[in-house]
Structures are given as C-alpha cells and as structure tokens.
Image (cartoon, rainbow, N blue to C red; front, side, top):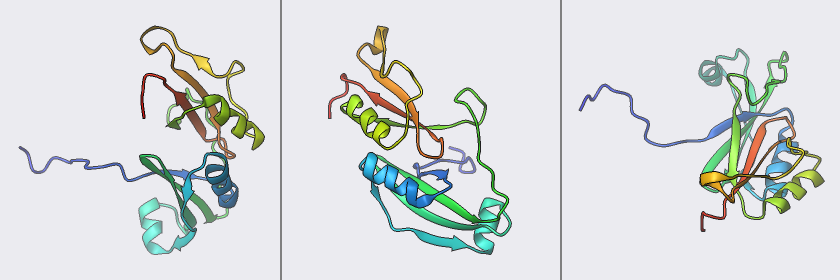
Length: 156
C-alpha cells in the first residue's frame, strides 16, 4: 500500500454561504426540523488563509441533518459579495439532497415558508427500477437547490 497516497476518511460537512444566517437558521430549523447550533463569529488571518478571502469575517452555524452536517456561513466582510446564480445543469452547481417521509407534507411546509418547488407537477414519480420513488427540487431562501426524495423501498 502506498502510504503517500491521499485518503479521505470521512465527510465533515457541506458548507453553504447564505445572505442572512438568521433567515437560513429559521428555514432549516423551523421548516425542515433540523437541530441548529448557536452562531459563532470567526475571522482573522487563519480564515483569510483557509478561504483565500482577504478580510474574511464570517458568522457560522451548523445544521445537524440526519447523517450529515450543513455549515451555514454568512460573510460579513468583505463588502463586495455577490449572489451566485446557477442552474442545476451549470458546471459547479451543487445541491443538497435529503430523504424524507411524507414528501407532500415537506413540500407544503416549504410553500408555507415561501419556498416554491421547481417542478410544476410535484412530486415527480419515477418508473422503471426506481418505481415508487418521488422527488422534487426546491430551493432554500438563498436559492441553494434542495432535493427531497421519498423512496418507499427504503425502510427506517
């Protein structure tokens, strides 16, 4: 075995930069039911070097989803931040995917929070080997694509 070869040992988290961390916390906690940590302010030389962003000042909170953690980051500095506008088909675009029970209830909770699903006929139903699977793309308040999947073949 080559001891110099890089080896990933675990997934740490997925980081998502948001424009309003309090609004995002409310969405992930109140709409999706996830536990969210307290906010923490970080910055200085270490974070400038890690992120490659000069003058980086960040407010961070962690969303504890089942089996995965999402890191919410709101940069308060530098001032020249711009929203990312990408489509799921654009290189570099990403999405979060969550397995759910009662996808219709999840979609209703998102709608109530002002988050509208992408598909006009929701949820979409799969045929073939994935028959019974229901899925939908929606977004969080900053436009981050979130996919919800309900698969009756997977038992809790």
